[in-house]
Image 1 (cartoon, rainbow, N blue to C red):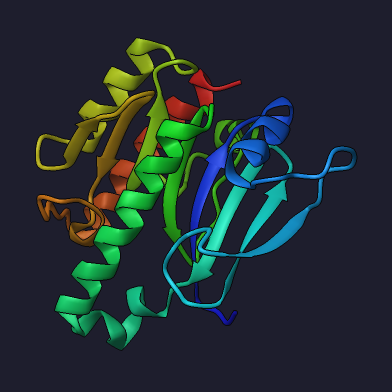
Image 2: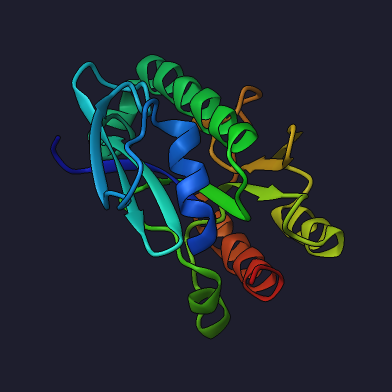
Length: 196
């Protein structure tokens, strides 16, 4: 698998890694948890093997992301089709595993809460999920308000999905990238304080 990468990342905390991997990987061997696993159809974006990687308390589902970068974005029909697949897989996983928060990321990594508290300048909160089971309702309300009325917001089984990129939501809602970056920083500050 070659860069650039597309990642579906979920902060589950260290105690949540095993339950998340058990939900995602059939017939997981008992004992030591692997740091990286290569499997087909984990993101469901390419024909070959994709990856699951554990980075501290974050579980990352990784695939090739070239379709979402640079000149490849000009192929609007393909971008929309692949983006819809990514959105559907992301919310499916968010509904399946217990997590605090998660994000759809292209060439960027999800930060743990301690990092967000020290420096909330994060690009992770442009297309993201917040768990109503793990994040207090006021923080979720503040995050949705910071995303703005023009962002796509969807109630899910375990929480709220918010999207500022047209390819990653079914309504095609889009926020200017620089504006989305500013909103992401405000949301990251709220999430960093709310998640432990």
